[in-house]
Image 1 (cartoon, helix red, strand yellow):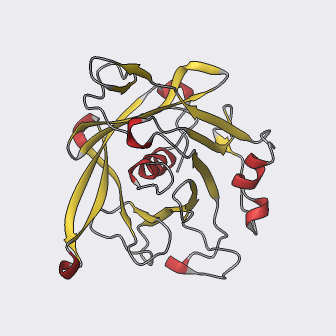
Image 2 (cartoon, helix red, strand yellow; image 1 turned 45 degrees about the horizontal axis):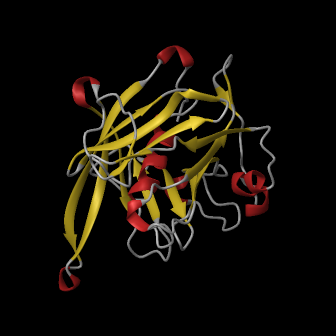
Image 3 (spheres, helix red, strand yellow; image 1 turned 135 degrees about the vertical axis):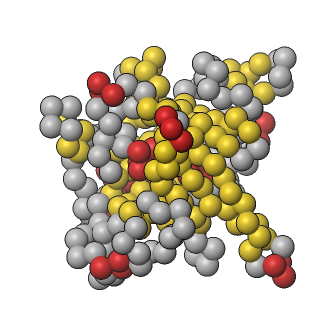
Length: 252
């Protein structure tokens, strides 16, 4: 959960998607996502989408074999709206509106970020457009502004929509360029991404467009790079990448 520091530079990771068969009578495939640090292939976190929910809801755990929301290994979640265009990132605290005490947590949950996807009339041929906001981090203390909204009106998403950005670090996806040779929109990933995909993205702060804060992209059928730096934490970066995996009714 701790944000990366500026002096850490770019932290290189990768995500493996592990597909399994679920609900055999329907032939539906489910997947878990495992996050590793590139150095020494160190496991960091795992995530799995909850299938019974009306909206996308990904549980994130520090144990790849224990993805229960009631477990002490549960560290947070990513939740979307029905269309899959708005995502909220939370830690493992309880929902103040429900009185939920899942995993024995007595603290109110902390909101750690949002991701918004614009509708894409071009379908899968067009690039996705992302806007992301996370709490500001004090570079001196490496502590983030704490958001513990009692309702959605006090949350990051509403503040972002109201343009109340003084406590938020704002990012957009770096616009890709059309490449006639490959017939697709492309970005320069400096060799870290090797396959074209609508899921690939780079996030930048509009005021510092040469510094890529998070980049995510496919390198094999079920393997993706995830490189991030300050002010993101590994958990926030992973959650934002999970939002790109999720299918979006209004975007493609």
